[in-house]
Amino acid sequence: MLKKTVHKVFFSIALLFLLVFSNLCIAQRNYNGAGIRFGIGPVLSLYNVNPNHSKSASQKMSALVSFRKEVRCDKVYKTYFLFGLDYFFHDVNFRSYYFKPDSVQLYDKTFPYNYSLIINEIGLPLQFKYSFKRENNSVFSPYIAIGYHLRYLLPANLTVSQNGNSIKEDVVDMRFRNSFIDKHLSSFVSASFGLQKNSVGGSRSNFFAEFNFRYGFSQYYFEEKYAASSLYINSYHLVLQLGVKF
Image 1 (cartoon, rainbow, N blue to C red):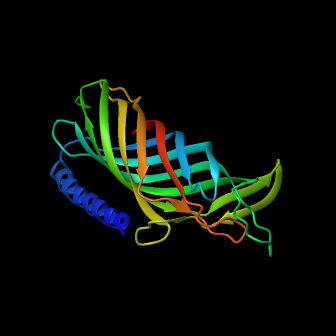
Image 2: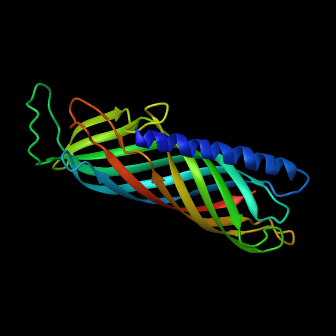
Image 3: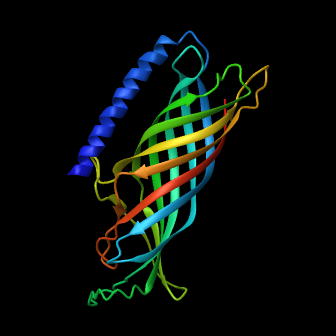
């Protein structure tokens, strides 16, 4: 219940920011400064799993692809509002049980099977960015950004193996333990620090590099007859984004 209340509070704050900055950006419509950002990069993820039903969670391959519409909200080229779309996939390995049909489900904490789970997410970001230097007359401008992101879980790809032999391949329905409106919908907050090269003196080579930390409000899990119950997974993500701005 507390988690859902937190979701509602942050969602309300995000909508308030959207309304406020939309009005500010409309007020600045006679000034140039809007842009589109496209980024891609690797992700470092740390995972925690339910120790009663699994262990040894580790990251495999993870990456994020992002698209942002950027709108300037002031006359000094420092304050921006961003919104867009993300695709995030991350691969986690852990050890757990595998119960064959009609077998006795014995939870003896041996965890003899290896699970490889590829999780797919779609994100809807709302971000506020502040540049420490004016972007219209500085070649490079460092910046910080904070954001609220809705995240929607797509079906995940699962492989179960033992001693290197594949036991089960499946597509599973991922869900949030503390969901928001829908079992596949939750959110996270983010904080970013980046450096951006701007168009100054006719240059068109705009690019940026950004570190982004993401903290989610809910564990995620899946339920299948062959898998242990309560396979709750919690994660934190550090993203390195490299991209271009148009």
